[in-house]
Image: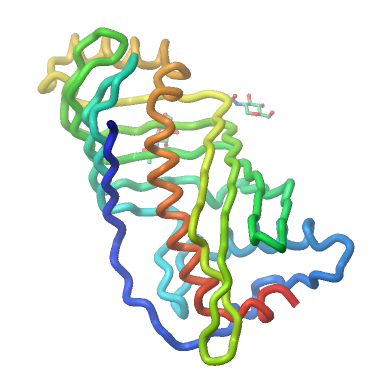
Length: 245
Ligand SMILES: *[C@@H]1O[C@H](CO)[C@@H](O)[C@H](O)[C@H]1NC(C)=O
Ligand SMILES: *[C@@H]1O[C@H](CO)[C@@H](O)[C@H](O)[C@H]1NC(C)=O
């Protein structure tokens, strides 16, 4: 069994009802193009939060910071104990496209896709284990770069009432990352043994796509937790009828 532990920056949530920021686009459910409207609204909202959103105490999305994540060893071609600190995801708001919105209003299930030309996962890493039978260990900086990345989002919400208003809360957020190409860079592998480290980085990049397939479920689970928090920072504070008219 693989275990995943994520530490997000704790933010004290306000309990008061807030208005959507005035620059956020609002969509009418009766609009025949409501799904396109929501896709554009979501894209604009994410881009506008690049530097954070003070009134909602949302930290910057560019880069998106996660204080630490730990991924336990799994069985398979890649069995790596991984620990990442000071994780920064660069590029989520750059060249962002959001499309294919589908909403099941009865069950409050939202599906959509997004696209980013380049997303860099940069962190202090600590790794130990095996990659395709080769031992791998080290501690240092890493940069995993995903090019032309499509992300599939599926969010399940529930309604709740507070002070006579109806709100939505995301209870599950499934993320699937589908990069066209990926490069990996781990500095200081094998305690800084330059020869082994460079050979390993070459090997990792030759097998980048396969390697990513082995690791992605853990990253997806982690960022699902991050995205659910940001979603709820907004949705649990603004009544539903002020988001969807
Ligand atoms: C990560 O690596 C990519 C590819 O080399 C590079 O374009 C990007 O600037 C790097 N990101 C950071 C934050 O160092
Ligand atoms: C990403 O897509 C663009 C436009 O289709 C293409 O020009 C570019 O070569 C692609 N980059 C990679 C790394 O696949």
